[in-house]
Image 1 (cartoon, rainbow, N blue to C red):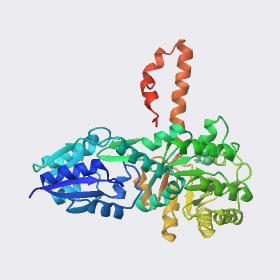
Image 2 (cartoon, rainbow, N blue to C red; image 1 turned 60 degrees about the horizontal axis):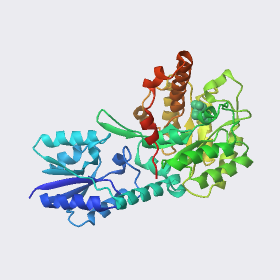
Image 3 (cartoon, protein in one colour; image 1 turned 180 degrees about the vertical axis):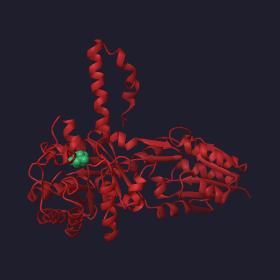
Length: 431
Ligand code: SPV
Ligand code: MG
């Protein structure tokens, strides 16, 4: 009896999957792999049911003899273990980043004479409808909001990219890359005060009001499903912050990060070059506690951002604040630095983790950009935010184009650098 292996990561079984099982049964004993959450979230849609529920779902399919967990997107583990005579998969993986998986599977099978069978992908109105329903489920506030907490359980480091518009949201939502045999995508979006303000041509001093910031969130939410971490600046007056928490929660935002500064807030990357005042531990703790008191769900997170290293108040001050803010109810700590050398961040993380094993640590490696996500995770970091890189890459490109058109009195010279018209009109999905 031959062995046939197929890997699923779906939450809903439709005709396409039944067809694969039918084809598999013709060839031998059918073993289905359930792709683990950890592997799945690196390149696929976020699961709407648990890994265990997926295993049960696949087990209930007629003709499936065994279900195993596949914890490795590239199939190495399962193929070594099972040595299937056949691997079956929908032929949609011949294109895009997933083709790297297919190439790798072919190589693995080639080593012992196994065979890959690409099954024509089933795409019809019914399948399309199921896709849409799953997407809707992911986009709804009650599902989106809890997703950051879910991600913290699923992955050693949650990767977050800034978004400040529908378009940048789409880039964070859809970009998947294959590099050195690994697929990757961002887990969540950061609605940065710096980038939101910059996009509006305004300074990052809490000038863009909350109504406008909420509008940005809504633009992003309209076209994406990934969770959102909102840069809440100082949180404003405590009396106002409690309303902000309620609004963000209702919208389906997963977390707000507020920083322990008061008065006129300036961007942290100015450091001590500008006048900035840190709030006292007592005042800021009271703001956190009031926010936690106001929130209605268990999903939402209030993360306290500590500016002690930015304002050169020392490591001990940063740690003392971290302890106090956790005690006040903070669901996570963000520690910031504007040094190029990650040493002070690493030192803080090691010390904080030494005494607190669970509170998530968030970092924004804009200045200390040499350290990798993996290295940060090894020091206990749970969330890495790329806070401004999309804005900073778009701006010089747009400025160069404007200058060159002025220089040459026509657009021909810049055309090679531009996205083709055909591509831009198909960039946005139509319903
Ligand atoms: C932002 O992105 O607005 C931030 C991070 O608050 S930083 O600009 O580094 O202060
Ligand atoms: Mg900010």
